[in-house]
Length: 316
Image (cartoon, rainbow, N blue to C red; front, top):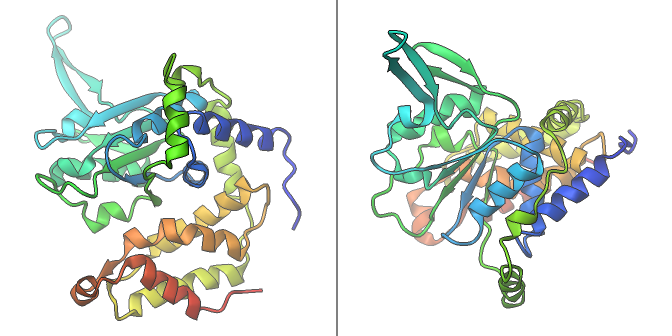
C-alpha cells in the first residue's frame, strides 16, 4: 500500500484542527477523535460536566464545514415531535403542512440527552442508524453529512433516564473533554477578553468535500488479518467473566470503520494495528456492561478492555 497523496487534504485537516483548537484549548486528542468520527460518518457521545466547551466545540465544527447546526435542550417534557417535526393545519389552504423539526440539519447537538424520557431518546435511533426520520408514516431522508453530538452529565443523575444499550451502541465514540490545565485556562481567559473565539472561526471545507471524504474512507484497505484481530477482541468481551454484556457485531463494524477513518486522517489508504488500538478506548467501553461484582470491586471497563488487549496477539 502507499501513502495517500490527495491534493489539499492534509491542508484541510490542519485548518480544521486549527479552527477547533482556537476555541477548545489543550485538547488535541479529543479534537482528532471528533474529526475521525466525522470522517467515519458516526455520532459522538460527549460525557462530561457542564462548562468545559461541548457546545462550543459542536458549533465550531459546524462553522468549519459550513454546515447547518441545531441544538436541542433535552428536558423531561420534550416530545418526539419536538425533535422530528409534525404536521400543522394551514387555514389558508385547508390542509396540513409538515414542519420539519430540528433533526433536519447536518450537525445536531442533543444537550443533556439523558434528561429526556426513553420514548423521546428513541426518536434519534432511526436518524443515527439509517440517516432518515419516519414521521406520521412518512420517511424523510436526512441530508448528508449528518452527525449527532449528544452530551450527558456523568455526575448529576437526579431526574435523568440512563441511555439504553440499544442507543449507546449507535454512538461511534464516547469522549470526555475534561478540565483544562491551569496554564491553558489562563489562555482561555485571555482569548475571551475582546470577543468570543467562535466569531473568528471561518469555513475551511464545504459539505460536498466532507461527503467526498466520507466516501473515500470506505475505500481504505483493511487487511483480513486486521479484521480477524477486531473479531478476536470483541469475541473476548463476550466471554469475559467481568462483563455481563460484550461488544455487538455493530460494535465490530464501527471499530473497523473508525480505524479506516483514522488511517485516512493520517494520510494512509490502509489500516494498521495502531489505528485499531488507538480507537478502542473510545469505541468499545460504552458498548459493554460490567457485572455487579466487578462494579463493587472498583473494576473499570477500561481496565477490562486493556486486559483483553494484552491477551490478543497483534497481527504483524
